[in-house]
Amino acid sequence: MPGQTRRKWAQAAMCAVALAAPLAVSGCASQAGANGAAGSGPGSSSSPSGTPSTVPNTAGTPAPASSTASPAAPATSASTSASAPASSAPVALNATGGTGVVVADGTGKVLMNGKAVDFGTAVHDPAFSPDGKKVAFIDGGGNLVVANADGSGRVEVARNADGQKWSHPTWQVTPADQYRPARDIIFFASSAKGGTLWQVQGVEHDGKPTTLGLIGYFDPQEVPPPATGNVWPSASGKFGTAVYEHDNGSSSDLYVRDDYLRQQGGLVIKNAAEPDFVLVGGSASSEGDPEVVFVRQVNGHQHVFVSPVQTSTGGQSPVPHDVTPNATADCSMPALSPDGKTVAYSTAAGVFTVSVKGSAAPKQVTDIPGFPTFRAAS
Image 1: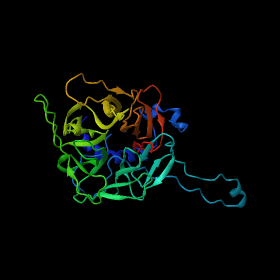
Image 2 (image 1 turned 180 degrees about the horizontal axis):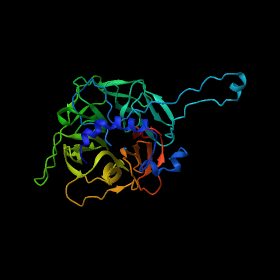
Image 3 (image 1 turned 90 degrees about the horizontal axis):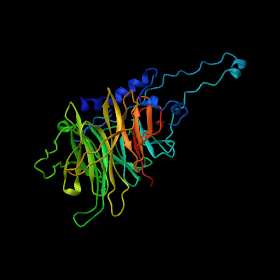
Image 4 (image 1 turned 45 degrees about the vertical axis):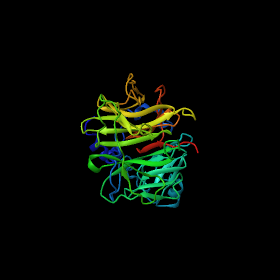
């Protein structure tokens, strides 16, 4: 998967260009077919972690194309005015109601629950807390912000003051146990040093991020995780497990970081990018089953795959399942629902959802590209 990092910075521009032209859709979008037309129904966008910056962040959430519709000409008489049809711009599709899907297109409006919620600032790469009550995102100034789920109560958790690109925050919320106190931490990626991961307390105000330790499993057969080229972190579960992408410039692989095992980790899936990691079916006595959704090149286009994650060394590697087998255009920015049953992803034609089983046609959620995520019921 060549040039993953460069591709990540260009995602927003590519999507906007795609929308500016007459839309001839194929691949991921065409799978929706009549579903999309009836209103039913991803490319990297974020970057590695690093130091703060004042540069606005556009990673992960492409801006919508501006409308080219012209207003109707004024009527020349009362009779023609009465008979002329009213002119109105087409209504944008927002089928997020009842789906748990949330879509940010890089503006201040975030689509959720069938509504467009005004956050008062540009929203990039939103990530909801495990209880669904808070959302972390990168604002229009490139800073890390936490707000209530409805956009109110915005707090600048960390100011980006060093000219880096921040992206893709993710929550690590873990309860107290006999070994460590409870934690409420946000990981994020930065363009610093060619791609590094950082962390900051989720309840901070103007906090000071620190680099995230990446130490390999204590196994002489295992190669230590790379310290740079790391992007797109995604954390889940009460033990602080996270999956992230390592982009070496010509290909990308997924690594796991297991904080419960004292920051040990290693390579889990080769030839994969843009992960979203979820522990499915957890309980008081069980962490749940680790699942990850990601993109991979197939016949020149990015398809969306879902796979179990092997979080320890040894054993047989799982075989990923392609949930967009008929894609003939790029799919990007996939997200996995908390119950592990549904995948949302973006295309140039909009955001779609599909069953992880891939047994039904995708359903169209929006008719503009954007960064999709899921919000757990709260």
